[in-house]
Length: 88
Image (cartoon, rainbow, N blue to C red; front, side, top):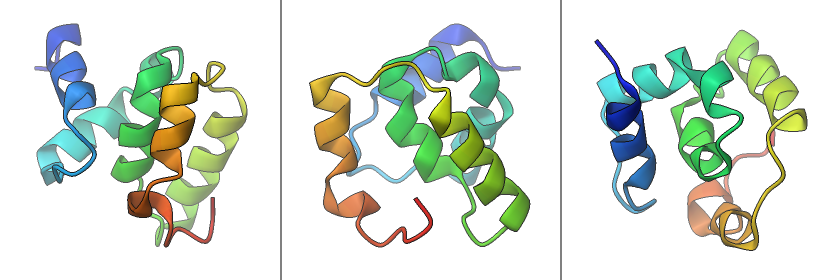
């Protein structure tokens, strides 16, 4: 089972640490809960399988309603981990 502490632990990982498939699945599963938690956005974007149209479409839709970004999170999104994602 997944609890809030588990999600917070995953979100707190540095962007340079790759998430496991299990961690990505947890983030994706709780995406609606996490969209109110600004620091979760980079991890959410990393959990998306951008080659699956349904996931990509859902991710773009959710980003529009995500909580307002902080400067720190916005800077994370400018990092090289997100530079190859043409769909965002």
